[in-house]
Amino acid sequence: MGKESYMKKYLKFAILFVVGFVGGLAGALVAPLFQTSNSIPQTQSSTGSTTVSNVQYDNETSTTKAVEKVQNAVVSVVNYQQASNNLTSIFGNTESSDELAVAGEGSGVIYKKEGDTAYIVTNTHVITGAEKIDILLASGEKVEGELVGSDTYSDLAVIKIAAEKVTTVAEFADSNSINVGETAIAIGSPLGSVYANSVTQGIVSSLSRTVTSRSDDGQTISTNAIQTDTAINPGNSGGPLINIQGQVIGINSSKITSSSNSNSSIAVEGMGFAIPSNDVVTIINQLETDGKVIRPALGVHMVNLTDLSTSQLEKAGLADSDLTSGVLIVSTQAGLPADGKFEPYDVITAIDGETIETKSDLQSALYNHKVGDTIEITFYRKGEKKTISIQLTHSTDELS
Figure 1 (cartoon, helix red, strand yellow):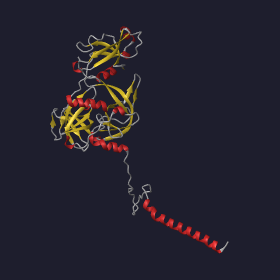
Figure 2 (spheres, one colour):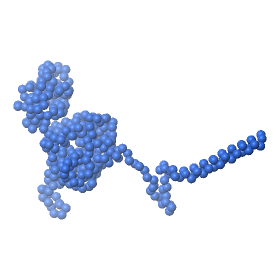
Figure 3 (cartoon, one colour):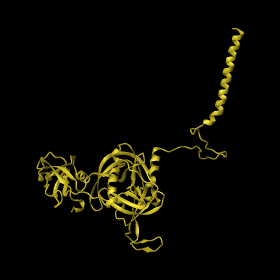
Figure 4 (cartoon, helix red, strand yellow):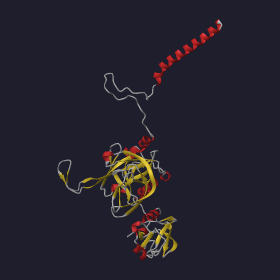
C-alpha cells in the first residue's frame, strides 16, 4: 500500500472519530431538555423526608369533560312536610307539630332559563306531599322552589326557581339515537344532599323496558324506561343520566334491588331505570303550559289474559282459544269511548297495528295519543277477529 493511500485511510478514520465524539457530546447536553413525565419522580427531599411528586399529569378524560359540562345544572330537591310529632327546635324549646321538617330528598336538573325564571325537572315521587320545596344548587346555595306541575303516570314534575344564581342549563339528547352498550353517567344526590353531585358511570343495558309500579294513590304506573347498570341509589331519583357528550339521555327514576318468587328472594345489582329524554321533553312541555298532562281515556275495566286461570278462561269462552296474550275486557264505563263498542270477554290484541299483550302495553299505546285522536283497535269476540275505529273524546279525569 502506497503512502498516499495510507494517509487517506487514516484521515477517514480521524473524521469518523471526531463526528462520533461530537454527536455523543451533543446528545448528552440536549437529552435533559427532552425529559418527560415518564421519568421516575424524585420522592425525597434534600433532608431525606418523603415528599409528593411534582410531576404534573393531565387526567382529563371524555367522562370528566361530560360531567364538567352538566354538573352545575344538577341540583338536590328537598321535600318539606309537616312534622308528625312534637320536636325540639334549634332554639331549645319544644315546637308543635305544625313545624315543617325534611320528609325526603331527591335530585333534579335545570333544563331551561327564561327571563328571571329557571326550570327544573325531577320525579313526581320526589315532591309528593311537599308543603315546601327547597333547591340546593351545585354551588351550595339554597333557593326556594315552586311546583309548576306534576304527572303521576310518567313520574315527572317541573319546579321553577329564580334564575339569578343559575349558571348552567342542561341539554337533552335524542333518546331515539341511544345505543345499547354506550356510556351512561348518573349525577345526583344518593342518600340525600350530603352526597350531592355524586357521579357514577356504567353503560346503557337495554332500551324500551316497561317498568310497572304503583303510585301512592294506588294507580298502576307503567313507564317506558332506559335500563342501565350505572349505580342509582335513593336520592338519585330525578337526576340526569347523561351520555359521553354531557347531554341528558334520561331522568333517573328507579332501580330493582331484589326479585322474589314463591321460594326465595334474590338480590339484584346493576338494574337501574331512567325515563328517556324524548318522553321527558314531551311531558315537561305540557306541565309548563297546563300544570298537568291531559291523557285520553278509553273507559274499560280490563285484565291480562295471561293472569286468568283455566276456569276463568272457560267462563270467558276462551278455553279452546289460540290466543295466548292480550287484554280481556271485563266491563266498560258509561259515556266513555269504549261504551257500546266492546262487550265483556272481548280480547284486545293490537292498537294501530302495535301488538298489545298486557294492560301496560294498552296504557302506553293509549297515552301516546291526545284527546281528540282516533285509534284503530284490533280485538277478538267469540273467536272472531274484528277491527274498530274509536275517537278518544274523553280524558282520564273522567274515569270513575
